Length: 247
Length: 368
Image 1 (cartoon, each protein chain N blue to C red):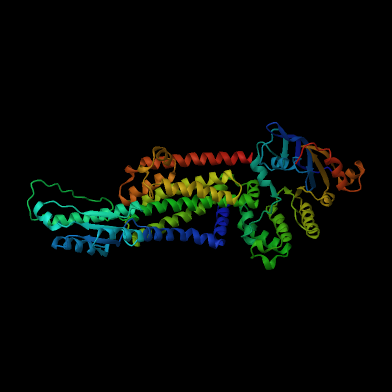
Image 2: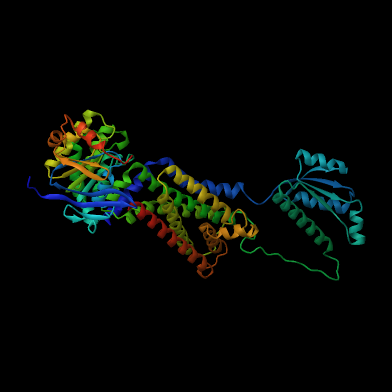
């Protein structure tokens, strides 16, 4: 694994007054890796992710995202990343085509690029018959897949997924992960937070955050061996139980 | 810039898809103007009047003729005794009673002096006042016709000229008021709701992660409502000129520019509201309670600010609509130019700058 590093964090810290939300975390993510970012609620996942997305300035430490500094180069970072939040992030009162056009538009794609992307996505997701229907008329699973496709419509170096599969049935979740593998094969790095431990198993490497620190970071297989557990569920419980911080 | 337009376009889709809101937005000025213009007038027409005529002579007859022929009064009852007055008032049949004394004609012609009595139902003080004024005016007119051919030693005649609104039409003050109200509502409430909606839906997060600058996002959300408000301004002006006969005496482009300025002030208020709340309901409540009410009460078009207690008068100064109302009245009704409203314009600009500074600061601290 001597690949190009797209995320490098060193001693990244965020303090809110006396409260240390993220406490000196260090890790690296390589190009086209699927990196699982786990942790109980309140462990500091979201804060860490916001710093990497350029939404929040770290208190101290260093981090490079797609080669850009999170302190100085947030504009360049924003151009090189995609983002999909736990809340469903498409516009319900816009059609599929309009959503794609809008997100393509705010990332500065040309008209031609948007057209190509739209027809590619519509084909790829088998939405030919629905491209002009409003997003609110689609089933949740489709919306989620579409939201992911729209998040990478500008071919970013990294896509951040914040609990992308909340409330989706296992079959759709599986299909969703196929899209993720697809994107990873095309060279997009995936940075994903999740509460589902079966999803953690799909990741190349997994980090587990407890109380603002990264307690463990390895491949799912190695983690299971190290913590003498049969599943990621068990690994997670063993680590998360150490947490002092509440929700 | 292209990103910006992509955003504005999307915003228009939102507005266009939500037909009901669009209908309300564009229909509101029309209904308001029609309601305020026709239903809510200060004029009191056809008030029921009872006459208690003790003299029954030529002069009293002439006076009654004169009163009943005016559009303000309907003589509905002719009474003969004092004790008939009270029951009529109690039943609510009449608004006013004119009592003519026995020696009316005699005294008037020979003693050169007589008295009349007006008894009025003052349960609604404004109406009572208006009715009494109308009646007194008619009586005075009647007196003048008698006095005409006589030489009096001293006589002061007041010639009243009602400047800017000779017919004393209510619409002259309602139109500027409705303009202030509608602009405030469409801009402040709709922008704040539109922004908060993105927060609620979770799309705001995605947009903030995108390369679009937060300031541009906010601006892009505001632009469509600004255009809609301008459509509303034009609608109101057209209605007021062609339906209510309220002319635009001043410079039209100055009036439109001042309206644009007020739109921006309202937008800034809407931004501030959207930066302090995360839910559409709260945004709507704050807009209604915090904007609608002060705008109606303190802009001066419903209740004269001069009559308010001093603390309220001071408070009214922080209501942007008060200044806009003054500006519109000055330009549209009085027909005066910029030299007469530059101070108010400066105040509005100042308010806008402060509001923008506040909301941007709020917006940024929420992000960090």
